[in-house]
Length: 494
Image 1: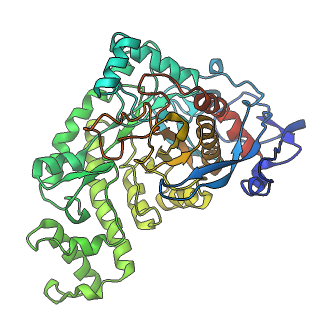
Image 2: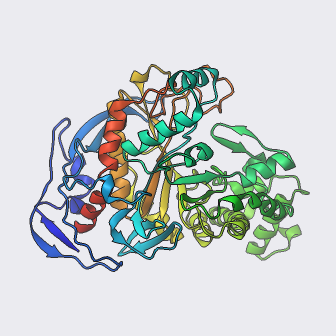
Image 3: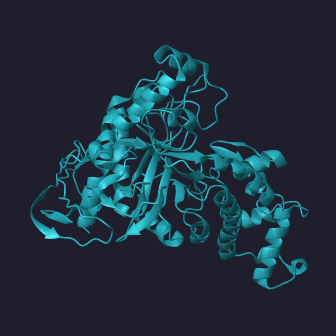
C-alpha cells in the first residue's frame, strides 16, 4: 500500500493545533505529492493514495448543562468530504471498505492491525460502525399521526429511514431500534440488539425502579450475587438463538448503564444482612482484610478496596452474562452494558475485557473525547471501544431542551459541527471501532409516558413530524463519508 506524503502532518500536531487558532479564524491542512511505501500486515494487494483532507477550526457556543453558562469551544470541522471520493460503491453491502481485508468469517469480529482496532465484516472487509440509536417509529399520539400522514404504513417508513441513514453515511443502528422492521428492508443496515438481563431479572425478582435513562436498584446494588441470577440469565438468553445466523447483526448489549458508583462496596454493606449481595460483599471484604466476617469492620474499607470491589461486581456480572450469550449465540459480538459511571476505574475495564468483545461506553460531558481516556479504556480492557451514546441539542428546534445528558448548542449547524469534532477525536484515537448518535427522533413534550430523560429535547436527526434536520445531517454526511480516508490520514501521520 502507498500513501502520499503530507505537507503538514495534522496527526502529529493533533488537537492542540485547534486550540491555538484564533476564534472564528479558518485553518486548512492538505496533502501533496511524493509517495512513500508504508508496510501493512493485513491481507491486501490493493494500492491506496493518501486522501486530501481539509479541516477548519471554529468557535461553537455551548452549554454542558441547561443551568450552566454558555461558553465558546474550539471545534475542528470539515466543510467538505475528503477528496479521494471514497464513495459507497467502493464499500460492500455492509459498509466495509473493499480495499482492505482480513480473514472473512461470515460474521463480524474485532481485530487489531498495526495498533488500530477494526471491526471486520462478514465478507472480510475492514469496517467502522456508524449508527444512530432508537431508530423506531415513535409511540406518542402526535408522532404516530405524523407517521401515518407521511408514510401511511410502517414498512414505507422503514424503507425511507434506511435510505435516509445510508444517504448520510450511516451504516448501522444502535440500541432500542426496531430491528424487525429495518431488517426486512431492501438494503438493511448493520444493527445491534439491546437486551436487559439484569433489569429483567430485577423486574421478575422485585425491587427495581425507574431512574432517568436507566433502571434503578436498591442502594445501586445490582442483584448479581443472587443464586438465581445465573439460571435466569441462561433462560433469558435462549431468545438470542433466533439471531445467531444473521450476518447483519453486529452484536449484543446485555443491559444499559448499570450502576458502578465509587462507594459501591459501602452500599452493598448497607443492604439487609440476609441479602445475597450483602453476604457476598462482606465475604469479599473480610477476605481482603484476612479476618473472619464476624471480625470485619466497615471502618477498615479503603478507597483501593472500593475500586477493586467494582471490578469484582463487574467480573461476576459479565462472566455470567457472557457465558449465557455465547451459549445461544456464539457467532456475534458481546458489546457489554453501555458503561456510564466509573470510567476512571481500571478494575471495571479489566473485568469487562475478560468477557467482552468490545467495550461500550455512553460518553457524555466532554466537548472533545479525551484521547488519554480512550487509550486507557482500550489498554485496561485489551479490547476496542464503542461509544454508544452522545449528542447535542439545538436551541433553534423550538424545544425546552431541559432533559437529557447532551450539550445545548444554538443551531442545527452547530450540532453538526459538534458531531464532526467529536467523531474526529474518536477516529484519531485508534481504539474506537464505532459510534452511535443518540438518537433518531426528537422527544415529544406531550408524551408524559416517556422516560424522564427523554421528555422535551432536540436529540433527533428528524423532528417529531419526521422532518430531517438538514444542516445537521449534511455535516454528519461529510464526516461519515470520509471515515476510511480519515483513518488512513491519521494513521499515516503518526
